[in-house]
Length: 399
Image (tube, rainbow, N blue to C red; front, side, top):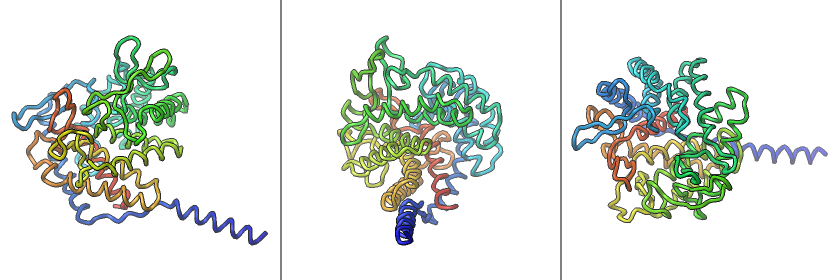
């Protein structure tokens, strides 16, 4: 009996040891760079704020003409500007950033009632969620809960997904990007106790995992479902090179989304999915050596093809979180990948020189190549996930 107990204890200890969180050692030079990046980014966003019309949100800037493109609050990227300001305030304690964030949140808050978009997670959680983390308030919570209710109206039990774009009557279009909006629903259940939000989120994640991925673990961008039966009608792209290609940012959305879904549920299948996506990215022959991904893994003109720094920033943030959930070998692989991305995004090739690029932080992003819009320009979500990745790097290295 004693021998059996000892054996059981040893096995338990081995299991604990195997799953113990890996301790990551920070690159001291990169840490110094990150601190300088936060200072530079804060200065950049003051430039952006100075040029921003009072009721608009930054979309992009065209370095060749020196002109900005702004958006209204209903644009899917509207949450990234206040979200980045709030992230930077956390790092710098610069109250000017906090004041500007609070000002623009007032412009954004009406979108809590918007039932025409699947992107309320991006719009409202990246903004009001960050604000609530800094200064928890019932006002923020109410706005976020209303946003979650609005997002839930786009869910179809017949399809098992949240609708992305409103198409023809019998079309039900769902994009991989939707995985990024589930955090709002998980949060809503945690705060309200209403499990319906959680159920919608996991059902969407399950349906997407079943239908959106190819045998090699790359994902399609867009699926069209039969709105009545839930049958998959077509798998295609909108922003990628071709229907069967692997759009760079799409792979980043999937990686981040399933890592986050594992965090919120602790269900192993989501971790396994995130790991499969990670291995697809890292083993792809067209994954650039500097880890700044091409806009599409199957772009025909690689290596001359444009990079998408926004996809790289998203991947860096996702890889850092994923490194905390996997075995030591993979943890080191994912951590080092993110570290390389951060080093390269911090270099002059991708990080904006102070006072240039209209106030944006990161350059050389690709928004929508097939539409020939936002090509090789800065984008707010590149800035947001770059700042987030740097914050995560500091946190998991104990700095």
